[in-house]
Image (cartoon, rainbow, N blue to C red; front, side):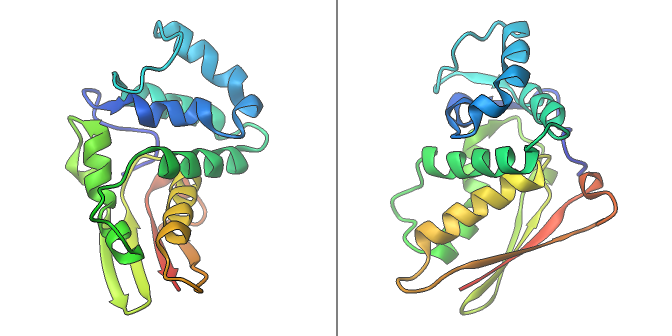
Length: 181
């Protein structure tokens, strides 16, 4: 799926939307977010409310060419991974990566199923994640990075490698992430 496009009926839960404003980098892109929120009548994000998913993707699209976009997106991905509670039964890196679809489904209603992740464990210490979502690649990177470090076995140091479907135009499609530890 191309980045920044989703089913117009899809909605994102507020706790995930709030990750945009709660990110450590928010001051760097506040000037982009606030006018869009204002146009949608949003003064403060309610973590329990539902918001148009396309609205948030439109904000990301506006942000993508701004100075520091990569850092801002990674910070948002890290914030989402820290803010959205994981099921208590998720206790290790493999379970965390396999639960990405559950977490996405819990955060987006009226979800287009083609946006889900394909996750495969390739070996005892290597997982492949195929990103089919409309979310910017650097947000996904920040999310995976944070989960990998949070759930990695003790005394291991996860490494994340990303390969774009189309390196000349990364936003035209997905990417594959390899997490090793």
